[in-house]
Image (cartoon, rainbow, N blue to C red; front, side):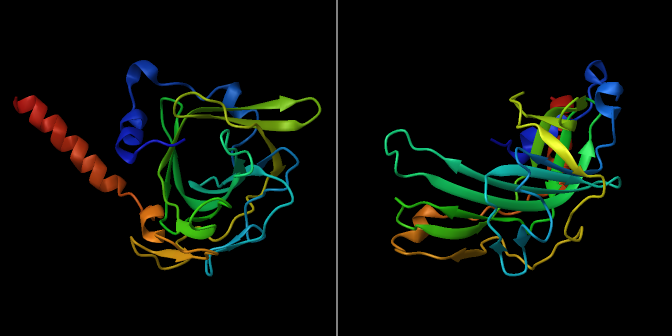
Length: 232
């Protein structure tokens, strides 16, 4: 679950009363590197996704993987299944890739802003469109994070979503970030969408491509609201 860009920005604005010191809870080891959950079959990098032709190499198990560089770049790989309580056979598969730039905010949160070339594939056996690719470019905010050392598993990264919900813990699989180049890797338009459908009925009503967000525009908007409030 992710925030709208405006709310993400507001939460990331430093508040002196909430500023934290990056203590041993964050500095057990550096955030830089590649992290992966569970069995570690989902890992960022060229073996997971090919943005040029919007394809994936499906891992043998589900999971998540995050990579970070020391100079502010990130990459995310995700593969999951969503159950359906009313239709148990209608399990939806989602495989997702994105990358961009991140900021460690003084209040302990992480703000991740994508380059705009992220994408995901949805597999819905019970949908009008059973399989399709769509753009994925959400700005994501994580409320907090920590790194600790497990006696058996080694270094562990714990991320918390914007509402405090913990993400699956991730093990450090490489101290060198395993990532694709840290720049936009394909040309995209706000409505770009590729459909691979077994039955393409009313596809336009079911699919909405998510376009990139502009943080600069949001900062201007927030500033305008502040000025208007001061005048009133």
